[in-house]
Length: 272
Image (cartoon, rainbow, N blue to C red; front, side, top):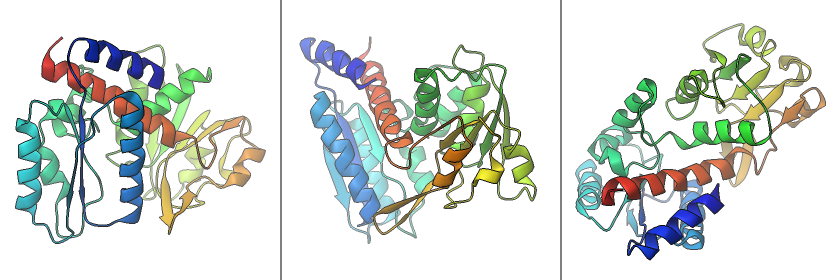
């Protein structure tokens, strides 16, 4: 996927366009700083310009909106990523609505989520898109199969359910969404041919929750310091037919989809 993006960047640069993905970070969250560094390194490797705006944790909502409005107006910036989470006291949802949806590389603007629901072209949330691509690459067909998504969050669970239910060769699944508010969620999980964990509760999914031979995708994580704690306990590998690794599974595909969205943003902003 990154090879395809790199080829697109070569074409754009040959046409006199330097793709630009701007990042915005508020505060000093260590995990967020790490994510920004990863994205900036990948941007440099692919030939993107990567302007970065960092605001102090004391920044106001108006400060954040002003930065976003400036980036909206800058024709040299094609895509914008506002790193989530933002410090307490700031409203990420309000800030997102200020962003030009055509520059939204996360695919989380309400307009882009609406486009997803209607099957219209636009940026697709990166982790769900990456999971679909990951399954397709490894020959895991979900068409007509029972997929259970454990988690209903706006960034992963809900958009993934919409994405995998759409009529498309790499989708077309029977999708069930359950969450921590469902007391007997293991009953649903155990019948899944493909189980996607997206709750952010470390170790929640254990071998007894997995149908033998099922495909298990760990999408939800939390951090303890720098240590990544996945929803899926590693012991699930004993019963799963295929399983994503604790590190190096969904994360790299998420970044790849971010840059695929960024190339789409360039096309929208410059035309063509």
